[in-house]
Image (cartoon, rainbow, N blue to C red; front, top):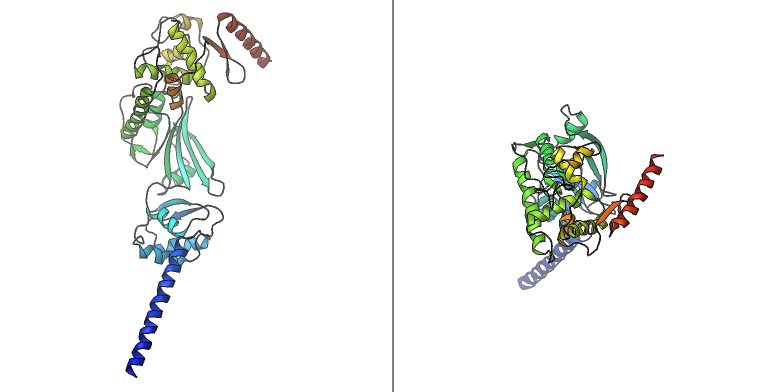
Length: 383
């Protein structure tokens, strides 16, 4: 009889283990299976929030099938104590395992509100914007100039929130002084940099930072990025270019950057200046003359005077041979690549075409015809 009872107990124990294994397998499958979200959401994890609070929030937003299973899964692999506060983009169909990875791996917030310091070629300023997770588009809520000192509550409430992201976005063609000046004035950065970095040596790009980040470290990061890319591009340059150093390439790239903002034109514009250097022929480009006047500190805001075009200065490419002594702005990657791998053309001239682009000419006669057409367009636009 006792043997019979023991056999039955053993059978029940085995069945229990099998059932438990099945439940665990089903739980693991559900934990890793595609989730119920049909569109992305922005999940906010407050500082000090518990796993239960996060699971409840996910359940309320329809992101998980079982908040209990989400918590058990986190506890099972030891991630229950690794929550990182911030605002995180949870994509449509994300599994509970993927969501847990998003909220525990750390790093900057990936959605919610961000403060952007935009540094352009004519102005700089703060922009507050919020990401709509459903459309992955930003809605702009605050726009302020860089010299703002009395910040409105709409800005400070966002800038002081612990999960707000901060980014600096530098436009291609901004000068080193413009970048340095904006960073020195940025209210969310710390430290100070006494000297303006070398012209052309700051990479135009977007930079994620944290509130209180050091200004010197940020500028060093920009300089390292530009110099690293320039060195790589220089190694991959075509043969036969009429200059012999990366610095000269950077200088010519800055001129191309200031002459055209159209991506499809960069290599053609680069070919014009390279052809002129090969002739040799003076570059005769207005942006270098302007830089000689402003030294990159702001915008000239008017046309060049005849006396300025005639003045013998290091940056007046109507009067000097070859390249100016330094870059005249910070060129982007595309402009650097354009001068190191230019289009093969016979063009020596170009002029505006009235649409934002340029028309190119091989000879002075062609160029004069193109200029005459541009004068007609200017006259029509003036009317």
